[in-house]
Length: 102
View 1 (cartoon, helix red, strand yellow):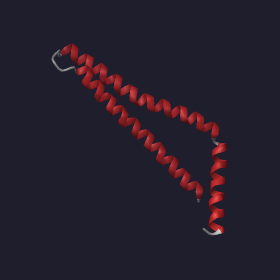
View 2: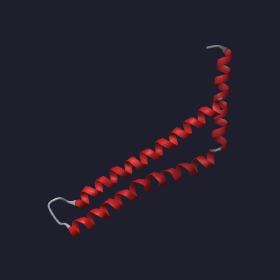
View 3: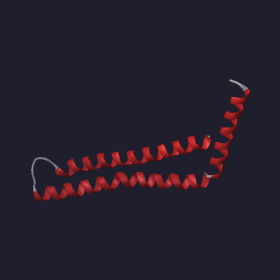
View 4: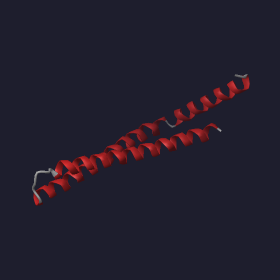
């Protein structure tokens, strides 16, 4: 590794550290907001699925538990939704980090 490339790498790391330090307060609130977003994106479909299942069980009782079925479906949809939000934010952070290093 040449001295010039080593110097550029050190400068880029210092710039990232400085930027992270300036945005540290925003990072905490952003992290808490993201936890809330992820939590609600799982909870809401799960509860809606359970409510729909209870309604179906009352109207059409049978051997199959609609409550459990739609609870699991809601949970799966909520997890997919949370995965979508987290991967979107991760991509945005990576893009921002790559653009900031130029």
